[in-house]
Length: 234
Image (cartoon, rainbow, N blue to C red; front, top):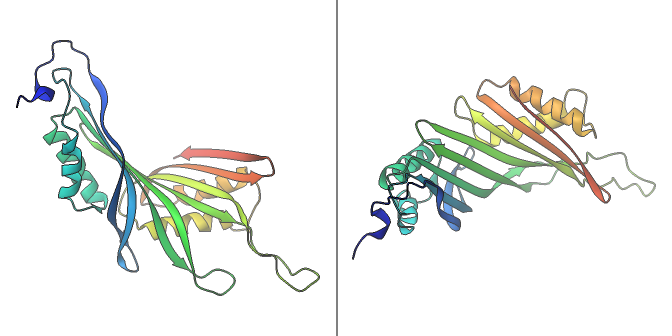
């Protein structure tokens, strides 16, 4: 059968993106405490094709994914991008994965809890590679003194901090979460101002040697609307 996708194309029109989206795929990510954590990701894979090709075989994207057995870390991410670019003879390769990450922690109530964090990794490879890690960290209301019945107010969801970073060196997902949580608390305690929280998080990230670039978005869920602030650096 003739390979139509790899036939020469004389129209000289570059296809900016061609690939597959929203692949639900079981993956393994690094876990500092347990070494590995099994989760399920939504995966997008696409390439930029030179004008000389009509297209590409979409099945090749999934073949490449299967070859790496769903193992994702900084090194594997780069290798997958290299494989995509080479096998598909592409000008650039792009890979996006989104997955829930679960972390056991000790809430203020004293009982063991498991928190879910939405994580995303965006990678591109043209001449050099670029990898951005993004994570959503829930912001909860701190406990306050008890009410007239002697019961403490339960912690509720105040909003979230969405933090995207480029790394200078390896950092665990747990370390990034902890760094964000410390920035939320700040030196003077919790602030309900999105502007103040953004500044506190920016200060914590810019002082971290392992992080070369960051973007922070803080959103507060108010009644009928939300407030928002963002900062980028360094």
